[in-house]
Image 1 (spheres, rainbow over the protein chains, first blue to last red):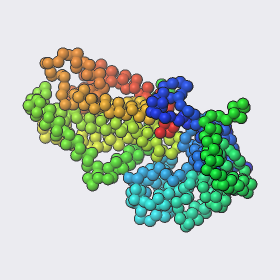
Image 2 (image 1 turned 135 degrees about the horizontal axis):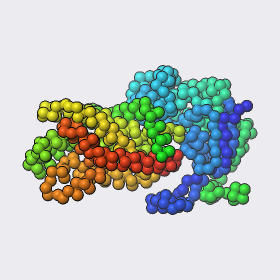
Image 3 (image 1 turned 180 degrees about the vertical axis):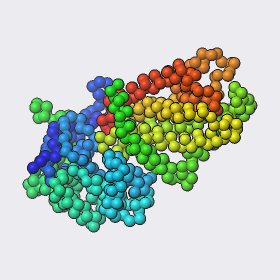
Image 4 (image 1 turned 45 degrees about the vertical axis):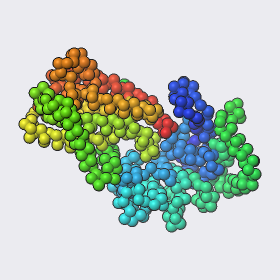
Length: 270
Length: 271
């Protein structure tokens, strides 16, 4: 087994500001200014070749931040992320230019990913075939339905043949047929030994696609391991969370925010 | 110095990318209008008409500038303004408005201002050609001095690139910088010899002209003028001014590439 993604002690810190003047102070003062907010705290895990990992957790637990960091879209505040090979991120807002046509967007996206003229000419028909949006390919993207947009985005990201694929909620808008097609593509990727990260709130989708699960809670890793072991635990937690009274849930949230406001004491003593 | 080389290397290795992206830029900014890219020409034409009416006809009463009819004098200089003005405004906000489309940290980010500048270059070339044709009929026939045009076009791009590396970085961190750029650029139309010149004025002391020449746009506008009107080899006859211009570019470019490289990994955090 070869390790393709090694995440080590990753922190992501944001500063919270109440007024624009605080923002300015934050830039000017050497120590910074404002309340800290840790979106991710001390995240460490490794992924192997051929792993399909579902990232789960309630809202605000840092799933999207982590997937952005793995995909190399945003840098971590501290810690290191080592990836082998090309990474590709698929998110709902997949960064398509609304004014341009689908075909032009394909070229634009591929250029941004660093492909040259010849490679793009080879990729284009494959992407168009996979997206399967018919005549709309020459229409400006602003006229697309949200399903079409995500299909095009997905088609581009899978056809460029990445070694590591990060899918952030992108399959939730496609219909059954497209979901089936995407699943086939992901099976194919799995066989080729690529690493896939899958973020979704749909536990059935996660269960269907993934073998491993990474459970995030307040920006920390709560559990990481085989799907059969982690998922029941997570379900148990969700049940408990749902059954909480309003006050209890509020307390839980407040605890989370307090925890994310600074490095937790256990980590500090390390 | 090292950061300067990095930026230059990125520009050269991404040249194809710059050209393609700039063409998409032209396309996507004009897709909504029926006349499309024609507006890039209609708009300056209308403004040139008004400038002539107010400054040439209204204020000067049709009096020529140093022996050259006002309309010809203005036309020969103003083409570059319709390049410089939109290019610097758009390039300054280029990074924070486009970073979302660039979903990769290893993208050579210093080309973002460059391709935005290039997208404004194409209409500029067309506008310059149209003005050159008009000037043919006015008796300023094409001459060997036209070769200077390439040099001054390059100088304009260098100036735009050096300035926008600084402004695009600062504007991403503090948005107010964009407002400052807007305010400063708006004054430049009056501080460059576009609509009037301190040169042939007897009312102004000589040092006023000297101060105005600090503005690098002054150098470029006068250069375009001597090329299109075929009056002189501007950059050779004013060697000192040429040296000043390129030293300024070097300083700005050094500062710009240093700032850009220092902050570029964290641009996305400032959104």
